[in-house]
Length: 581
Image 1 (tube, rainbow, N blue to C red):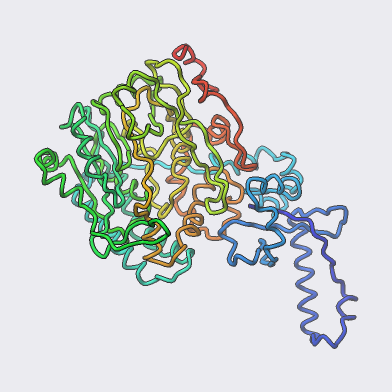
Image 2 (cartoon, rainbow, N blue to C red; image 1 turned 180 degrees about the horizontal axis):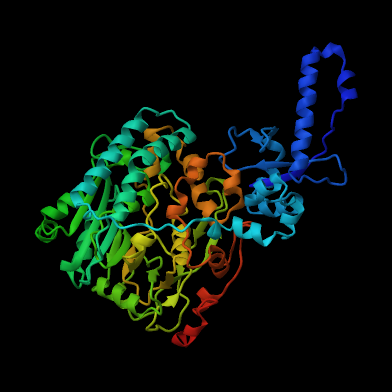
């Protein structure tokens, strides 16, 4: 976060320099250098729009607390390279009062830091909202991005074998690279991933998007299913087909991340871990079963096999799963520990078609797997409404979604509008894969995928709705089960997952308008490589989305917008109010 603290600084003049006692051991050359540095610093601060706090000779210092600038946890480095002890600042970093204290005692500048330093605007202008329209438009996260137009290639679509072979080779090469830097810092780990992605994965992804298969018109549905060492993977696939209305039109893209040798459990009681047997290969078992073999032989189950040590987290797994899509008109993303209502596939598509939108997305947090979905089908489904800013430093105040709640007394025919897309269950028209493709530059993250996905869909013209019927159940409590960050700690060093994830999450936070993650404030510009190609759309403004869902990224505050809880359309969609009476 760009912060300016008022602090008195005595500016040394020529007389001060020559009067320094010789006993301190400074040579005449040292004094000259010190004097020139002092003059440079004063000029730089004056040219940056620095203003006094009752003292015309007191410059303000521009300090960033973004993970990209904080090189040592005990040191605090400002944009001029001057270091301060971090303990003097810690009182301003407590959550949730941290930002309120900053607003009261300091100043937040964010994306306007470069404009302040160039003299285009003063700090006080930024704080009082007196920002020229030209600068405001220039710095808008939506307006700043360029429109990305993806040409279609004359080449045919990549075959599924080509896709799986490339992704497997990339993951193997990345694993070999990571094995050579086991004790690396989180910045070094990111740079290693970035370098390999820029040279391998990113060019391939661009070509893939240009050669994507055409969307078919056969009512088939593609289910993206990412599994990490999940004993429920097999039952999820079996039940999906068993309860499908049209199993021959159901296609699954499975990213199976398993341990195959020398396996460890998750963290058990008392913090211990144990040696365990290799994970079940749910893909192999299903395809060998009488009910599964026909689907696998017909190519309806496609799988990318990933070693647990190669796992890059849930978002990256979903990126890989999206590449297993093969032209199906409908796309659903789920977790690998789900239960299914009978005819869940047909009901999902029917709900989408009844939503009052040309580009609907249907999503919520499903009820528990213990729920009787058949009995619940006559009741209103829960809706996902409540966002919060994460209240600990580890998660970097990223948006968390609190869970679905039952707000409605009456079940309606048309899905109600909702503010957010849940990563564990959403269904949409598959054309979004061209317009809102998954971002290959977001490895090793656990938080942030839902809010960035929601904002990207909205700004590309998609409308988010809550299902009228709960068609899936979800196993929410999986204590003591292996987690991907535990594998990270074995691949690298213990504790690396949190700082690495927080570092990479700046890519998400910048797009959402967090001032501490603005482009000006992150030193590692590689975090933003090709970000415009995987960012907001131009159909709607990101600021309008934040206003609709009630989020202030600067103050880290949630304000009540009512539409989700009451079930009424949000601002700008009032023409559909009669559908929800």
